[in-house]
Each structure stands twice: as structure tokens, then as C-alpha cells.
Length: 60
Image 1: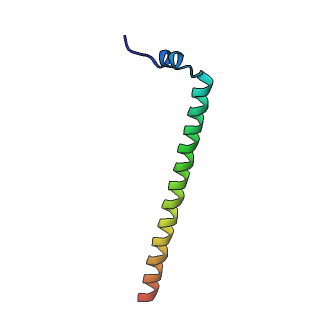
Image 2 (image 1 turned 90 degrees about the vertical axis):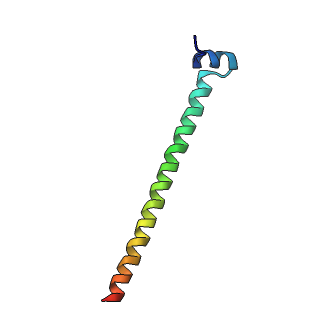
Image 3 (image 1 turned 90 degrees about the horizontal axis):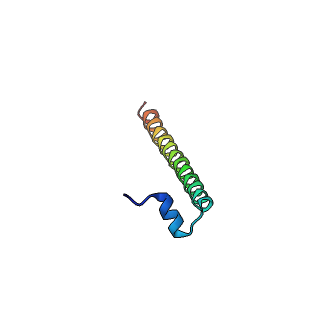
């Protein structure tokens, strides 16, 4: 028989509420990281578009 997460929690003295709170914090951080990465990608795409537009305007 394998060692279950429930048994680990019982043995560790950590409550289910503490596990759930830590999980919620982790998921929030993951969400914020995703938003930051999306923002950075959009900013990079805007910079590339501006450079292409500038180059095209200069060559005309």
C-alpha cells in the first residue's frame, strides 16, 4: 500500500486548511505569472510591429 497524501497530512501535523491556503496562494502566484508573461509578450509584439512599421515607412 502506498503512502497517501491524507496520511502524510495527518503525520505532518499540517491541517487541511493550511494545505488549502497554501494551494490558493500558489495558484494565485501562477495566475499572476501568466498575466505578467502575457503582458511581456504583448509588449514585445508591439515593439516588433513598431519597428516593422518604421522600416516600411523609411523605405517608401
